[in-house]
Length: 368
Image 1 (cartoon, rainbow, N blue to C red):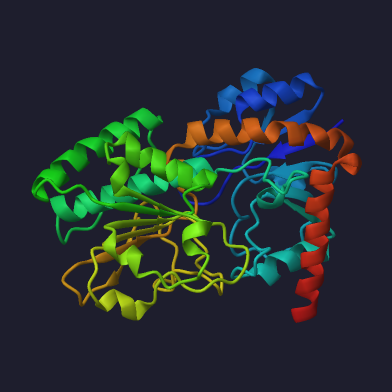
Image 2 (cartoon, rainbow, N blue to C red; image 1 turned 180 degrees about the vertical axis):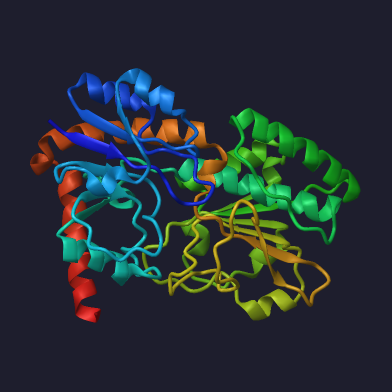
């Protein structure tokens, strides 16, 4: 019997869940055992899990879970802890690409003989991720990008208000479409150009779909992907779009898309949304900011001397703007792979994830 333990997320304003009540119901019917930590932040009420038969426990009890339980989550573990980790954790660890703090988190698992099965690196035989939040990340990122451009027109010089989750895509679209109509009217009827980098991937498709949904014409949606960037950056064309949405998946060093010095010249660009959010990656192709923003302070100003502002949104969990829809889509895609835990030793997906973890542990040992 496979035992899953869904931990409560501790990241501020994280409302998504890796396992939804509907997914849990399917797994329970197959004979899985599931414990769910109660959470006031999760978009799904505790009662929704209890109703389908999950065992409910207080927040943080995963530390006392039986060794055989898989600890399932989404975002990083609580900050400030250094104790060894003994369980097998399934989550987005954000430590396999040498991000900030990567050696610390891996050493905790190494010391405790635990394992990370990283959700970002669950790949099928063709190398495609079995489940990803990419579409909703791009969708939400484009939404904040367009909304920030609107705010610059409607409330110049004022701080962008905090965001709270929207109940569904329709509500988000309606809210921003109304603001866009007013902002365009103040902009002499000129609709902003939205440039999407990585437009052919799931994330880029989400960004383009949102732009269309709020009424931005196709000719104002500039779609770049590998064909347009094969010669390598910098790319001055980016600076001529009002809004730039970066949706690439960074897995190797690439030249920067633009340099800080380029921002002092002629540009129309006033909003950057770095959906990819490789803030601490040494090869971040947007080298004009160094912090992650949050939903309560969604953008950071990176150019202050130029009359035209330039703000960056670098929220690293954008899909939580639409927590119910994004969770349902992700959990549905993940379900077949979770079911394969019944025969994990035969699964290429899980085997590949564990092999990658072992490789990263060896790399960590070599530098500590």
